[in-house]
Length: 416
Image 1: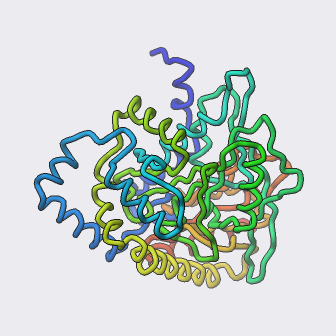
Image 2: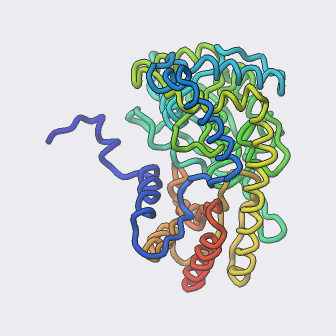
């Protein structure tokens, strides 16, 4: 069977494929499984109860239910949801948004694909532009979406600040950071997947200013952040302006199965998203917006984040940190300061093997983590650090997380 050049990006393995295959493999593997690898959020009973209540109201109303499952939505997404979200953003943050600044997609991954390929790659003047990632490691799901023949990402190595209590924190290196005609946009995730780092307000202000000077957009991936689901454990200010493209998601509220991404941007960008939806999928799903609109209209979404989601993950985080302190006290491990999201980023400085090798060994034992190398778009041959870290999802049942971390400790201990 013959395939086109276009198909080559789908016929090879990648970090994204590895991540999702591991999620599936963990559900079908026999024996004890410790799923600490994927990005699946936890099941929060109180949140799921609210969602079941909302679904009950929908199924109890034949007209609303009929529209949800039996009619296409507009290609830019459900107007009622976009209006309710507009009202929330204007009331809480005084952002000058209207429904024309908001579009819905079938998951944030599809948003990344459109935006990155719209602001990077080959341009009409013959130039080739890239997306600058000012702080790497960065989300592995970005790196596989480029359609251009040349790489579309430029990653900057993070500065590392060593902190007390065997922690560390990545920091943007602004020395020599210049945005030029070779850049089409800047992108950061906040909190950062995989590390849990939250880029500070001061760092964000510098990036915003640099983007405005260069007349290129700043893309902010807020899938774990602000204004929802609010999985942030440090001080951070949400922001938006017409030069910012803010990506949000319903997944980390507990709805990963309904694939609902949200783009908040200038109307010119929103029209691009609308047309992309129409051409590639006719329309985004109505399920997520229909389910969550009542929470927005009743003013419940913020309290869900503040009173249920954030405290839940804070407890999970504290438990995982306690287990690491207990099981890895004798190991040369540092934990990236956990400021948000649902991951711990463990750095085993001086590890005799790469964490890719460690990852394979742990998988054979039924322990699923993610090695650090795929989170670097352009790995530096002289930076051993990029092969010394693993990402651990701490959102699962506490007993499973405890056992999995203990097995990781045993495997690492055997290498020293």
